Image (cartoon, rainbow, N blue to C red):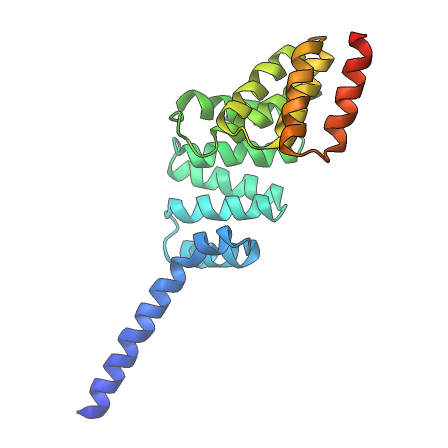
Length: 206
């Protein structure tokens, strides 16, 4: 009888540990252990192919791990199960962006910001990527609008302010460009790109 009790206790302990391990994917992601997070998600999907949360965390980890083609594939698979999941829509946009599929990426980002709540965790990132795409397309006024929205959501990222300064500089809005570069330098006084951008714009204003 004692052996049976011990065996049952061991079984329950194993099940508890296994259940905890299955929940570790997001923790691993936040700890920047992207490959480990991906592996946990893969195991979860083997058990339950319709587990949307596993697709979301896996795609976040795949993008961080620079496995963009796989992230695109997995996001599409997840969207078959949950077509309106905004997290998958946004991360699919990121995957496509890094694969150079700018127009397809833009469509995903626009869909995301049109439907996400104002407090959406990745709204700022979506606007930032939209701004970068507009810069690549030499649509600098559009880039200004998108990047202005990005820094409004996340005002402490000096690199975003620098890119906003660049978009305004290229659009010929020099005074506003100086303001953006100044904010970037306030956040990071050693930013080479912001320093050079401010010097260029000041030269044009003289």
